[in-house]
Length: 246
Image (cartoon, rainbow, N blue to C red):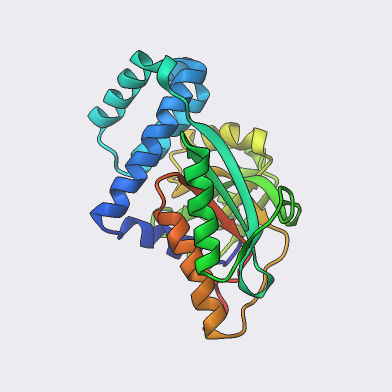
């Protein structure tokens, strides 16, 4: 993911309007409900809930909203019926797109995802049609704006904590871990008071695809924008090289 506009994307998300923030809060509320149902309402004994709370705080969700969400989920655990569904498909120019959704209505979500691909001249594929082009990894992003630690010291701290790779970009640092090692590496960095812009398990493309004309780029962005506006959609992964000149 090195150099592929990840930090610019983070900054853009923070600058989005209240509607976008409301969508983020809706997503996090669903994650809280699922985490509480699976592991209980105590973050000390529920690692998944701890991760969701960290995500909520990173999105500037108020503490009382987080607490209300946990209490509501604990009281209504039996009624929580969200399920995770994944869709894979192709965008313009042979780009690969993976969509992860959390939904209480598979038919609605499938129709919305299919519509997003169609409006951007893409196609939904079968399960596994593009996921082999991605590696599931833990990814920690640290912005240079927030961290004044020497890059060599940060690299050694990351590798000593169990990271498998460390890369410096123009705007920050990218730390890669195996999915199961993300929590321990994150905790080790937190103990050293190292600020993190993001820390999550993600899908990283093995190779990136360039789009050579404005129409393809416009259609691709249309697919992504529609998907990211959908309340059911949690994550969208793709292999378009966002750094190429438009």
